[in-house]
Length: 321
Ligand code: NDP
Image (tube, rainbow, N blue to C red):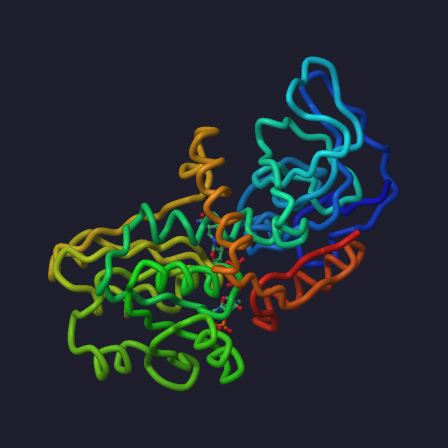
């Protein structure tokens, strides 16, 4: 098989497309022929060294495919089954050996590429809107980077829950996509102060929650927009990690700040199946539009990373074998 491996951390050039030994399933594992792997911003943090990984490392935390071999002590999974997963590294490769308990079955009415596309960003959007701050009808939320992978899905789920959605985007084309997903107010935050724009439309301290995957460049200004006892969900670092701050900065509005991570919201098998089940159900019924902005061969993972870090992608980027 072929797959991407990195021997050291660094720029996109450390991602090498190599000939690797075919995996054989250990007891308790299955081997899946990977149809599509999802690209996620966390892959860039692992590649650059912001998040530590053991080296050599096989990147890619999300994918979907068809079972091609089943190891001993596996029950309930057969050759030919369609599975999707997140949190298991090594997804940027033609095959992966995986514990089926870390996977979910993909229903027949959900294409494998779309299943791969929602396992990480989709379940993140789900937990943010449903659990981290459970949006209610009439709530006002701000979603940063609304045309991104998480962003386009989070806008749609927020609208399903009846919220009013403000979102920031880098370009007019991205604004168009965010509006298409249902955003009520799009803000070109490279051209105007997004905080001024939110205050102009909604008034001061009008937001119930900010969902922030951009981090450093928007965090402080976002805090000023939250109502008393509002929630700042800082879930990513696309512009760099948030600087340390004193808890006293939260006191003007008794704010709550949380730094959530998907892994803690799919910690049990029941929760994993429930979240994936909601997403697959919405896709099957046509209620969730999963926008795949770009498909590239896995061998071109380095270029895909350059595009993602360069703010040149929208929606989901898939790596296909
Ligand atoms: P996106 O597709 O949203 O891409 C990142 C976007 O961030 C860019 O397209 C860009 O949009 C915006 N951005 C703003 N400033 C910068 C910058 N300086 N450099 C690069 N991009 C910038 O990525 P994902 O959907 O994969 O992830 C979004 C965020 O969510 C990431 O921070 C990621 O780490 C986080 N995340 C967190 C999870 C969790 O559980 N904690 C799980 C999944 C993702 P624009 O041009 O419109 O500004």
